Amino acid sequence: MIGVPQITTFPSDVSAKAVTDELAANGCAIIANHATDQQMAQLHSELQPYLDGAPLGKTEFAGRTSRRRNGLLAKSLVCRELAIDPLLLAICDGVLGPRCVNYRLHVTMLVELMPGEVRQELHRDGEIYPVQHPAPPLTLAAFWAYTDFTKDNGATLVAPGSNHWPHSRQPEEHELTQAVMSQGSLLLYTSSVWHGSEANRSAAPRTGMGLHYNLGWLRQEENQILSAPPDIAREFPERLQRLVGYDLGGPYLGFVEQGNPIGLLRNEEGDFARTEPELERRRENIDPIRIGDMITGEQ
Ligand SMILES: O=C(O)CCC(=O)C(=O)O
Image 1 (tube, rainbow, N blue to C red):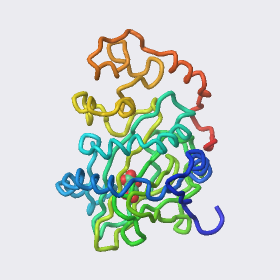
Image 2: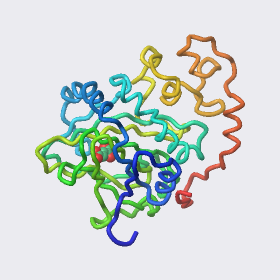
Image 3: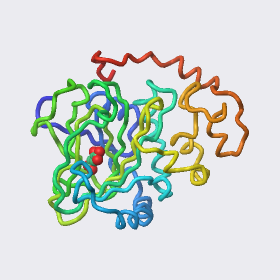
């Protein structure tokens, strides 16, 4: 990338294709003001009590002046809505869909940087899996601005274009930019992109809400089935039930008693079909993925 690095910001009525193309090109994008004021107000009233009761981080990575909470689907109705936002899922279809039969919700997290928090160690989310970078997108991070993100309060640092960098190349300072955005906006980045939270030099907390997605044949970062066990998941819309893992990940992948786990939520007997014609069809359309040292890029 030549010149000052930038994250492209799109309006909320952008097409999924425009964002998917930007993610393939530069690995990151912002969708401005995507959640409504009403959703953000309700989100705060649902989640802030959990955040206020959270302990400070106990590692450098988690931030010793930060507070975090997970298991958000069990705690917030708005979080359930945002996790299946139609535009966001259409972007997941474009980014993750070509390489899996079903993608999953990977992790839910609130990250509140308190005043005085220092810069987080920069990282690639894909490091959670033992693969060479650059790799095709294994995860898509959807980081919602729960508060405004400003230069001073720790708006996430991102290295646009780093989705194409060789495995060992790390960002230099001039290759980083911050995801400055207003409350309700959405920062997206793929798994090979270098990023991390910046120091909070302001007098107020900066909070982001991560609802990240991953390829359905990889293990999810957060154990969603324990975070949303059947008694809780029964309250979810069906799309969300399937997204957290009450579904086959593909033909024969993740069955319960010989059937699709969605039946568990409906108290149905296993149907003894560990696959479905639609899953078989989608599986046929995925080009086999080479895992190893080959450099594949994001195309
Ligand atoms: O809080 C942020 O800005 C980024 C956090 C992050 O990347 C992480 O904790 O994995």
